[in-house]
Amino acid sequence: MKPTLLNNRLLEPIFYWFASASLYILGWKTSGKIPDMKKFVLIAAPHSSNWDFVFFLLIIFKLKFPVHWMAKNTMFRWPFHGLLKRLGGIPVDRSEKGHMVQTMTNAFEKSEELILTIAPSGTRGKTMKWKTGFYHIACQANVPIVLGFIDYQQKKVGIGPVFFPSGDVNADMTSIRSFYVDFSGKYPGTHTN
View: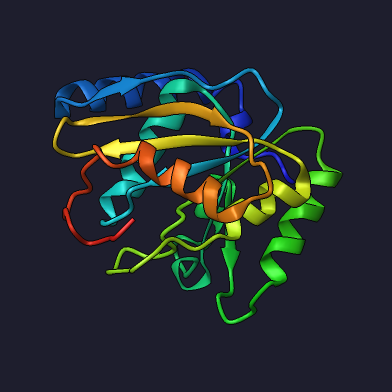
């Protein structure tokens, strides 16, 4: 994967200061730390608002880690297309089923370091269950899953535990979702985990 603005040593202190000040002014706290691993899939959940993206950027600026993140290709429109890609964005065409898993697995195999962030709900709208693409990417690429979270009720955003997939998708998804039971999105009830 190409380097992002988050890898820029000159901009890193500016991003850190901006994120720390913004979170403080808004009354938000951060929790956890990035694990000392070069490759993993980072879940961003729950996802119920466009504001989730703003808080996601603030925490990655504050914790100083260069992530790549997937989002629907319609988000990458002019005039933000170039900036979003430089911030680590990867446009995804949702109409191509299954292609995304193999593409991202290949990216992990070719990269010495890669942190890939995915919102498992796949959308801000109401969903009955999470998509499992992030899980299959982690399994095929043989990388762990790190549980990132946002909680609007407690005004907290952070990084949770590391989860190593066993290959039993049903059991593992149940375990992963159980971590998120106490976290509240901006619009509670938007997602059924």
